[in-house]
Image (cartoon, rainbow, N blue to C red; front, side):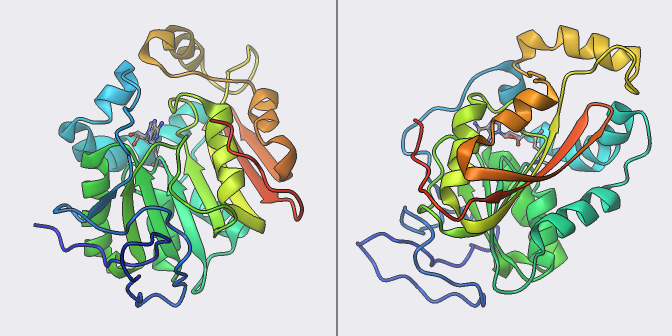
Length: 276
Ligand SMILES: C[S@@+](CC[C@H](N)C(=O)[O-])C[C@H]1O[C@@H](n2cnc3c(N)ncnc32)[C@H](O)[C@@H]1O
């Protein structure tokens, strides 16, 4: 059995929050009881059902977790952008965007194996790994245990559209490659804006529509055109940026083929309302 994540960090009223070893401990982040189950996962689905598109169903299969990060994730951006994009380059951009370190509270939403979140935890941040796929969360925790960061992560099973975190409670929110299949993107990004503190940073990597004449191959364009029934969508860069809404200010934007990376900062004023 996996070692349970430490309890703590919740704003519930039924039990005392347990102090965390993390220097980033804040008792007011989670809005559900921080009670990990036998897998070491806090289940915050609250009876909500995940979407059942083919892409979403595949991500809930255990065999997908055997190959996702080690075989696909590490190669995919290069294949899709038409030039090599080493994971190290992507993680350097993530670092520049959110400036991780001890004392930071970060959330990796729709994390799969937690590539971004694990990287932030390795630098001392306290990280919530969020996904609706239990097999992926189990795999993420196994990786954290191997990497020695288990005590700095908390695995939460939740929908991106219903994040169990208080308004303005986190310093950084990250999402890699998930907007394309997540369901309601507008609500998901509004949730990221809601949970970020003023001045908090968002780093988002998302795949956008290939344009004829761009650097992406014909195969990528054909693949995108055929992907509709799988539940994966490819908005344009402008449509993706527009999702930021009034409470996230675009700081930087980089497009390589169909791979868009955005850094945004939560505006200092206003409280984004939950859109759901
Ligand atoms: C492309 S993978 C994510 C990759 C990961 N962020 C990375 O950088 O390696 C998409 C993930 O989103 C999760 N997911 C899809 N829709 C979701 C939703 N509405 N709420 C939470 N997780 C979702 C899937 O289970 C899957 O793990």
